[in-house]
Length: 206
Ligand code: GRF
Image 1 (cartoon, rainbow, N blue to C red):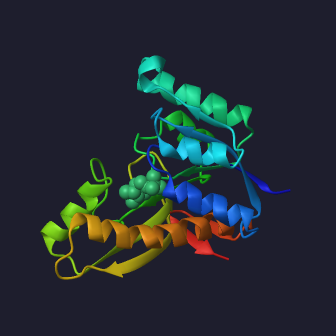
Image 2: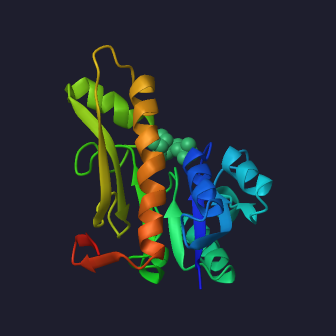
C-alpha cells in the first residue's frame, strides 16, 4: 500500500514540484494526498491544484494562536490519513503536538549543510547570505527528520555544492536548490520503501 504523504509549503513550491514529478514518474511508492500552505498566495497551492491534489491555505491569523494553528494542521493531516509529512519550503516552526503525533515521520529540507547555518532565523536567503559572509567554500542541502528543536533531528541525506568566486545569495541559492530537488525526493523514496533505519539521532539507509 503506497504511503500517504502530506506536504507543507510556504512559497513557490519547487520542492513540492520535484516530489510531484517523482511520484508521477513512479519513483516514489507514495501518493501526495494533501498540500497545506500558510500563505494564501503560495504558488505551491496552484501546483497542487494543477495535479489534482487537495490543497488548502491554513491561516495562522484566523486560527488565533500558534497552538490553534498547529491544531488545525494536525486535524487536517489526520483527516487525510497522512502517514508522512514533508516540509517543503515551509517556514513556520511545527508545533510539538504535530512532532509528537508524527515522530520520525516528518522530513524537512534545509538549504545548508546542518549543523552549519541552521536554527532559528536561518531560512531562505538568510542562509546563503550567512554562508557568503562567513567565507565558506562549500554549501549544500540537508534532509532530516523533524524533532522538537529547530533543524535538529536525525540527518537523512546531505549533498554539497561549491561556493564560487563572485557568488551572490541568489546564485548560491539557485545552485543549492538544484540539489534540494535531488535529495528531497530521494529521502521520501527511501522512507516510502522502508529503507530508513533510525537509531537515536543516527539515520541509516538500509
Ligand atoms: C528555498 O529557499 C529552499 O531552499 C527552501 O525553501 C525555499 C523555497 O523552496 N527549502 P520552494 O521553492 O518553495 O520549494
